[in-house]
Image (cartoon, rainbow, N blue to C red; front, side, top):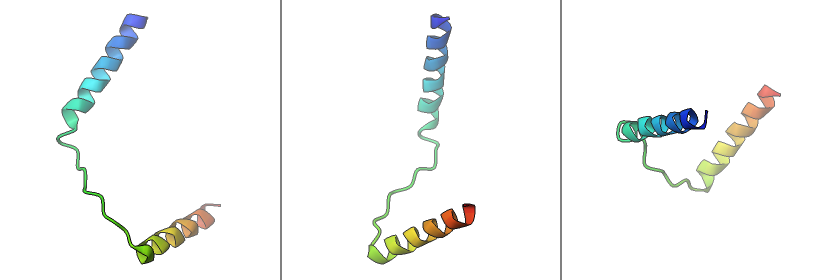
Length: 51
């Protein structure tokens, strides 16, 4: 069982290593205070609607 689990883990890692160059990663953006406030109010509104 342990051998099969190790084989599965290695295969899983290999798939993600192969896909990393293809995945659509973006450059992070800095947010100023106004953008952060807008983000937090939007998140708070979504949480209120979900509750």
